[in-house]
Image (tube, rainbow, N blue to C red; front, side):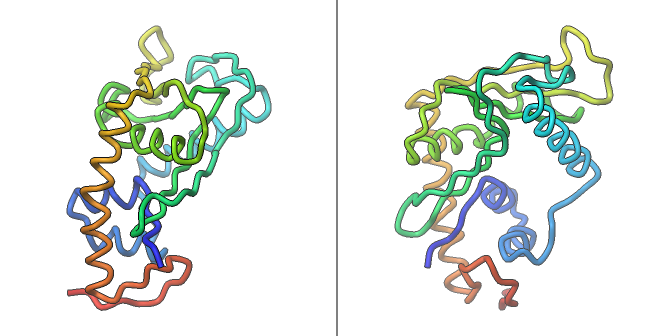
Length: 197
């Protein structure tokens, strides 16, 4: 049995939120906050808009898209310990769009994180060609303007994929071993209890 890993799990773990990470993995509790709920609402709205009109909503720039696929789920074997799961907001030809909302970060902040590099790794392993990603950030607290939304483009380079792999290779063994040592079931389709130290 392998660990079913995702950016959410890895991000919770690296921030030291171990209990939340385990509960998220075992589907015992949803990770939520007002900001997450608002982001989910906007994400659903954007997905429905893209599916209907084949373009981004005005809040995210209104760009015409070619053949967009929304909420593309990728599941791929990463190594002997873990499978990698990624859900792409929008995949349009060879462009990955990741939509973000809120006023705590801008697109450049998100670009320094590991979500997009991990998505590049997942796409590479699945054989999905991606040239670059665009992090499209909309601050719903401000009016739409020339600076809202803001965007950052990240090219799918070997360096970015290596960043993603380093992140995965650092955290996966630690999480996997913790789960094994504490008899936490790797099968995350159940909500069986676990022994927490």
